Length: 293
Length: 293
Image (cartoon, rainbow over all chains, first blue to last red; front, side, top):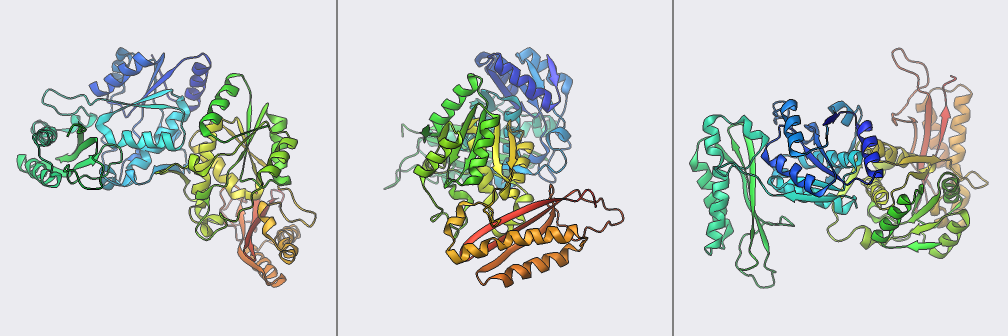
């Protein structure tokens, strides 16, 4: 399996693949692959005749003081994992090739980008949209695969693709979890042994919220407080960035599931949280079908 | 010649044209075609096997109080002019189809977009970039043709294409002028008879600046003042938005052409101006080769 580093060479190769009638599946990653990424590659392998995995730690989606410098890296390991999962090519460009001197064009999805993770990480989704549109224009994928752990990112990219009429199908794939429920993430590598133990508490509270709702709780403002307090009380290393209940497409905050006069009942509820475990920021979510309420 | 209004149908047609090996030339316009547009269509006709003219008065590039509502429109006339000049298709989408409810994705070229016309029209170039990337994604042109009257727009689109790796060649075409030198513009239609007489004064001052520089003037700050005063004194209806001397690629303001220690002499000087003639805003420019100074 070849690793291509030059954007112009990648673009040339993609064009020739397309001309030859191949269907290109793109799995964009920041490397340090885990089972979540592997599931995306395997899904792409099933759907497409060519699978390209991009590995690029995108500096413009990191804010000052974030973990750009320490984001885990291991190209050898990534290469063998991607190959084993069925990738045909890895595209691994340099920062200088992706953002040459005087680079100044940015893509943003206004509104969706300034809540939840966007509120804590200003400019983050602008950086994501910009690199993703570049990857699309270099690789010409028919389909692009994103993990649903980054649910807000998935929604924003789908919105960008729709709004700008980009000729690519965006596919969201289920979260892959460790045995204790912790969502797979390259950043889990940063956790100390004791932090690792506390890290699954976010997911446990997503499940708790789900259970309470299934048992008839409809006051989500109350439930939000309970879960936030729970998480804080569980371990000293845990800080809550947010724990939100939102409509799954518009990301509108939902305070109650009680039917309200003149308001349409939502169909799918997103329960999403972000916590800091020591210096590491982790996110997770689940989607609850409430059409049968 | 067919007029296509539905973006999805246009995209389908473009795909089939590409599959059939056609080279697509796109001439994006806001309609009310004039000889400037015709020169773009003819150039596209020479270069490409298929020529598509888009007609779309793009609301998001107009600010509040600007002339979106009164921008001249005449589809019948546009149709026959485009056909006569050699266009194969007109793409004329509705505002609702281009910007459906909750449209929220925007593209911007930071820096270049906030000077000159961008300083007077905040958000204007963001609107231009967004519609142009949409047109590219609907029409898949190999080449796109822009008039150099809108020189800043041309530079910004070239930058966007480069930064985002868009697979299209951006081609700038010379300004076409009326007999008295006035640059062709759909907005000239707005001018009253007396305003029309004064409108060419901007160009006359671009020529004056050029002549003075060719005769050895290198103090551009002084020259800027002279030209601004000239324009204002020429007619009561004239107001100067800007009259600038800038490096032609970076748009860096140039105050002197005198060689300065440690500074590289520029090669091409843009002299660009925007004036208001009554309620109508007109722009014009010329580029001066000064490599032989």
